[in-house]
Amino acid sequence: MKGKDNYARYSRQIFIEEIGLEGQRKIINSKVLVVGAGGLGSPVIQYLAAAGVGTLGVADFDEVELHNLNRQVIHNESSVGTSKVKSAEKFVSHLNHQINFVGIEQKINQKNVEEILSPFDLIIDGSDNFPTRYLVNDTCVKLEKPLVYGSILGFSGQVAIFNHKGSRNLRDIFPEPPFEGDLPDCDSLGVLGALPGMVGSMMAHLALNHITGLPVPVNQLTLIDILTWRFQTIDF
Image 1 (tube, rainbow, N blue to C red):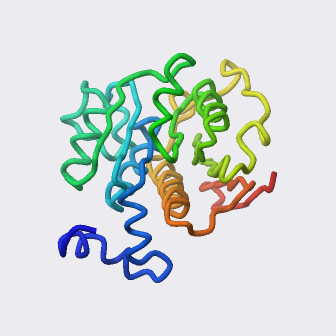
Image 2 (cartoon, rainbow, N blue to C red):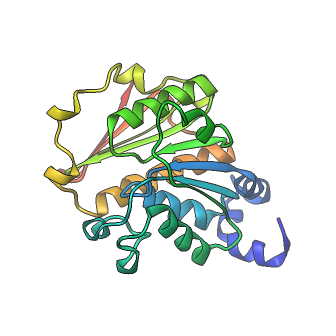
Image 3 (tube, rainbow, N blue to C red):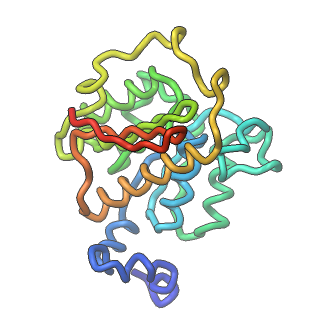
């Protein structure tokens, strides 16, 4: 911790008995990569930057489009046409100038995935396609890195933490990715902006629990249905 300003900024976290000064130091010293700066990545980036994650990496190769703005809350109208990574960096610098922001304007693929993931302690997958999800999952298993997972579609969402101290991973519950041509996506089915906000916030909370050593739900997938307002968990 550095001085009174830091204490004042993070005091409401420090006041939590289970976190305290030691937990806040862990947050400040953590290195987290967020894959995707879209609907899920936006609230994750927002809350991790606010919490004081010391090194925050964001990997995305896309540009902000007008239709993104109903749910991708770190971007705004002036961001349209610019890269999501640069927009995210601007947002983070305005929110918390102490964050070491690492922007990665690349599409993650087989050739670069290990190089991109290796410097970070925790990976958060906010991607929107199955090839990236499975590639990131498999690489986290290989590199022995924990992975916070989330997905959204329509009124439904999923959240889990994989490979936590060697726990199970995405392939243990969904062994193979489905054929993407058979599946709807947000472009065709749509999504209400509050849903990725809810799921992304839960992903950020899982990340902070992991960083500070608080309990996380191991080998468990949380299912969210905001149309019927039902939440359930599946052990796997």
